[in-house]
Image (cartoon, rainbow over all chains, first blue to last red):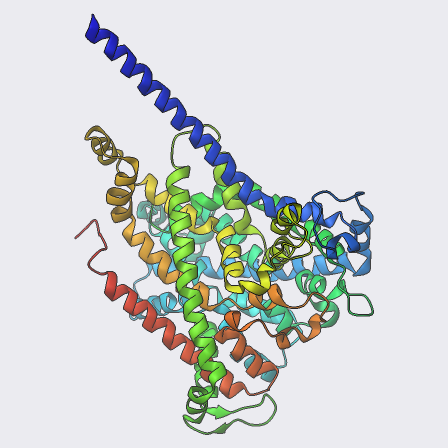
Length: 291
Length: 282
């Protein structure tokens, strides 16, 4: 009897401990969520403050009055829509050919047996290790010779040139496909490219979405390449915003800039929340962690 | 093979590094002179040292945080998916937005931390961007940890659950499990992340310039902005040489030095950790 009682007590204590640990876990999770969301929250709050509130110490938590006109000023002070369309156009110019060529290369690396294939694949891996930003300087000298500065052809060339990371992702994804499917199609008289575009591509939605997201977000958020290659009205939203919200005596309209950034972030967050599931799936199945 | 579109600029850049090229005239071949000039330039060597320091701290910080976060977010709880996507979300925020968000957040006049300090005492304030520039920069990268965390998360989910259950039955503490099972089994992934981290840390250029540039300065002269010396990285040096001083040869030589250092770091790292890495198929 006595022993039973003891057991009851220790079971209760165990349960209590487990509950305490569980609560602690949630508290911790909520703290993490707050820490990760504070910057975005602060961005929105700051974008609604006046210029004076932004530059006087000590900072206040809430703006005295919500300055919604900051948003109107943000889209009218610079030609917001034009730069946004520029950015999207540029992203598409890079992304669409990029997916096509990367998938062709990836397929070739996954299936064909050509001499020197291993050597070329090693080059791809090596190129993965090279910071893309560092290559911009020689590329500038190179494209200046071809008179391509301040045109969008540069992005088209990059797209056709295919980013090594995307080639790698496609290659990994394709190499898990059962070969029987392709062999059957080839027996039925389908060409190699036909196999790729009619059979493999419709089945590889996760990796396509992954590459699309990666490259779209890359161009959308890129700063260095447009700064160097584009000027004037051709530039992207990121550069235009960093340049645009300065008034005559060189003062930056901080809260207007932040409003501009809020609008700039909306498409990213939309695309991201739609594609996130595929993105994680595609990244994992391609990186070989989860076959 | 279209891969040559990627390789040609590299070869061209190596050729340019051996010449004196100012972007207008015909490049003159001058051999290794650029490389020798660079070694004697204290600004270049200083920037290289700062870059290596930054790489080290950045990788250490992001690795530890993303491992711990991945381990934590793998635990069973309600709303786990939501927590994961919140941590993952900042990863998609573009560079410009990130920089200005953190600039506002850490600033003396508009920052959150200084708001709390100002509540305590109106004389108390830190300008974190000026006092700890590298720390501010790394905090920003920790915020964007999502990509690395997802990979670790997948790695943790791949750990066979019977291993962990066996350890739990034997009475191992959570920390012990993390230290003795999770980390050794994840070591190939950690290696991968470190090597990628070296590459990413060396390619940082926009963030340090914009983070500490004075708010009113005209951005047209974007590359002329001088970040504090702690954040003056080799790539910034190279870009300034190329686009401000018009000496492409020196800029190319600087980037090739940088590649060399990167590969040496990666090799040293791979050699040093060879013993600790666990491969399933060995």
